[in-house]
Length: 124
Image (cartoon, rainbow, N blue to C red):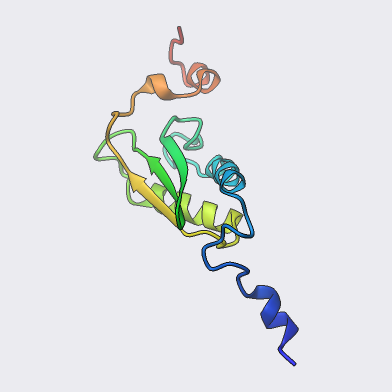
């Protein structure tokens, strides 16, 4: 008889999509990204407007995000933090590919309006 504990931890579907719909995975990814904080501004990457897209591709979840500047000191850490947060939220059910993109370039106008006000930016 197979070990039941081992069976409980085995993936139901190697691609992950049988256990979790792409829409549910995207929603969980957005929620997870709200827990990833920029170490300098102390705001999450979604509120900062750093996440441009979360989409399901055939065998993975793709996140396109940017940094505040190309020389951002957190440029190596934030994408990995985002990947780990999503991977944890999805219990590893779906591979996660976080891609740093530079187009469009980030600007303070991308920050959530309430957060921008709290940081002292004038919001139109």
